[in-house]
Each structure stands twice: as structure tokens, then as C-alpha cells.
Image (cartoon, rainbow, N blue to C red; front, top):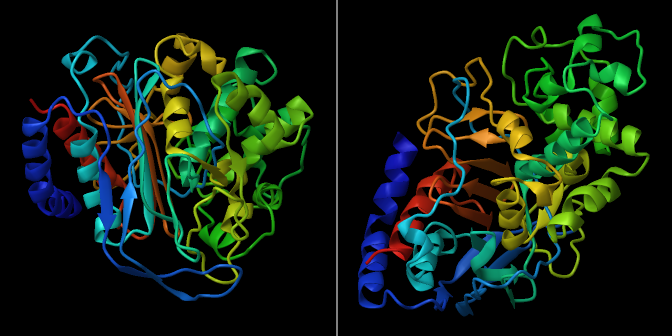
Amino acid sequence: MVRRTWVLGGLIGVAAVAFASAAGSSGDTSAKSVTTPPQTNETSVAGTIPVITVPSATVPSTTVPATTTTSTPATTTSLAPTTTTTSTVAPTTTATATTEDFRPFNAAAFDAVIASATVDVGDVSAGTAVVRNGEVLHAAAFGLENPLEGKTATAVTRFRLGSVSKMLTSVAVMQLVNEGALELDEPFASQLGRKGPFVDPRIATITVRQLLSHMSGFNVSRNLYFGHGVDTWQQAAENALGQTLQSDPGTAFRYSNTNFCILGLLIEHVTGEPFERAVRDRVLQPIGISAHLAPTFDTEAGDAVQASSPGRNYMEALGPAGGWVATPTDVAKLAAALRDDATTAGLDKETVDSMRVRVLVPVEFPPPANGWSYGLGLMLFGDGSWGHTGTIESTHAVVVNRPDGLTVSILANGKRPLNTDDLLPVIDLAVAAAFAA
């Protein structure tokens, strides 16, 4: 509750301004420019840590009309989300007609709230997107894409996704399950062609379902992923096969990137393709979006330059668990594709519903304030929204399918907020401001 107080207390003034703005110009659907104050950020690029002074700049927010369906290259990055509490089945959030379906969207009011929680408090840049009824309603960016060159962020700037990347992996896995190429409740090892013997015999019993739900018993292994313990995500997966489990499979929730690195090996084994290509062919292209796995350093043109400490290689080590980068729009379109019949994601409603069945054990003590739990590659929140969060050095990412029918993403490049979960109430405030009478 402390961080909730921080978010709500810090945003209450901005929210009031946003609501006042909405009341004065409720028909305004164009994004206003956001002026970012001077910021100083220590950004590590190619092994150095220059101190970067970001000059004051007026950054226009780019609004995508509701009929826009174009997508741009996407990328992701991951880290463990906060925590989750459990029940049995997540509330149904199939989009139904609401007042928001018929009212104008005040982009200026929405953007003011998002900026107040990101670039206005020190982030280098941030991006956001809103999808309604399958169409992009709004997309905007704030701050600088490349602070070393003073390049302004745009709505097509790609950000690290952190653990939001896990949604891509889980969709690919569930497609293979539906096709009969993988068995959800059979041991992953035999389906991977690994018969052992394993250091811990229990590894041979872990099912694909238990990997997807972080119920496998594998250790968190933070140093493996964030202390340059391995060079690649494939090595991280192989390393896990020589571990001793921390609990019996199926008995405890332990959020571990290892689960999704192993799922990446399964995807490669079953499809006969490199992981990135398999996900691009099976998930990204059918939805009409793009993304790429990115290294910790040496960003591509269009990727946000995000601070990384020298000697780190977490992007390479995370891969299927958090190594993607993408635009906020493409992330929102990915999540939105899982609504309703989910056919564009290569799944069906029954499959997505099964992915939203909560794990039956506690995921955190004490229970988290937002009441989230975990399904199969999806985070399920207490208010009925669902999606995923992601956190890495200088990365805060979130995408949610809301009960009101909106899908909203925020990708932040910087240290704010301290807890990625704090972006959830920010989204609530921004949506309320955008639809205020």
C-alpha cells in the first residue's frame, strides 16, 4: 500500500489538471506536445557510463487514429513481475459495449497522466498505446529515443519489454499444444528428447503446464541472468537441467525465467526453427506486428537507447523470457489479439480461457495489494484485467486487457516508477481522465 500511496499521491494533482482539461475539451482527440524538463541520466552504452544531460525539448505526442492498423517493429525485454495471489478462474473480461466505446478519447488528458509518472519524474523516454475494438485508438511517445544524439522518441520507437516477452513465448507454446505437437500435461524433458539422467530426478516429471505457470520448482537464479552467469538463453536452459529443484513440481509458485528459456528450447525442437524465427512466423506475422530479440548493447535504429551497466548481458541470457523489444502499439495489439475468439493469435477462446486459470497456490506473502495471480504465461489482476508486466535495468513495461474493453500498454525507459506494478493505477487514472465528461 505504500507504493500505491506514492502513485496516487504523486498523480492526484496531475489527474485533477487532466480532468479539468478533459472537461474543457472533451472532444479533443489529438495528442498535445509534452515538454520534458532537463534530466540527467547515467546511461551505459557499449561498456561506458557517460553522464547524459537531456536538454529541455518539446516532444509531440503522436496520435494514431482509431482506424489505423499499421504496425511497426517490436521488441521486448523481461524481468520478474511483482507477485500474484491465487483463486481458481480469473474473472471473464471479454470486451462488451461500454460508454467508452462511444465517447471521444481526450488524448491530451491521457498523455498528461502517463507523462507525469514517467518522463516528468526522470525517465529518459516512454511510450504508450491504446487499442479499442481491435483498432489502435491512440499511440504516443515522450522524451528521447537516443539521449546520446538528442533524438526524440516517436510512437514507433521500440522499447525493451522485459517479462512482457513471456506472452510471445506462451502464445507460441499454446499454438503447438492445440496442434498436438506438444502435450501440456506431459513431461517437457521427454518432449524435448532429453531422457536424463538428471542431477535431480524430479526434473524428468516437470510438465509444460508447470513451466508456463512457474510451478516447476526451478530456482529463480538471478545471478545466472543478471550477473553474466551464461552467454546465451540456450545456455541458461541447459544449465537448469543440471540444477536441484527448490520444490516438488506443482507444489509452489516460484517466478523463474528458467521456465521460459526451456520453453524456448521446446519451440525450437518441435518447429525445427530458431526461436526468434518461429515466433515471428507463428505469432507476429499473423497478428500484423513485428519485434526482435535485442542484445544488451548495440541497439538497432529505432530502438530506444536504454541504460545498461558494463559487463551485463541479461538480454542475451533472457531471450524467450525477456529479450524482445517492440513498440507500445505492437505490444497492445499482441494483448488485444488474445481477446474474444483470439483467432488472429492462432488460438481460440477456450485456449485463452485456459491460460487465464489462476494457479492454486499463493504467489506472495503477504498477498499483493493489486491481487494479481498467474495463469499460463499471463498475469491476472484482481480488478479483472490481465496481461503482463516486465522489469529490467532502466525498463518498466506493462500491457493490460481491461474489463472495459480497452487494451493499454506503457513502456518506460528509466528508473520510474520504482515498482512496475505502480503503472497499473497510472493506467486507471489516464483512462478516467481521457473519458471524463
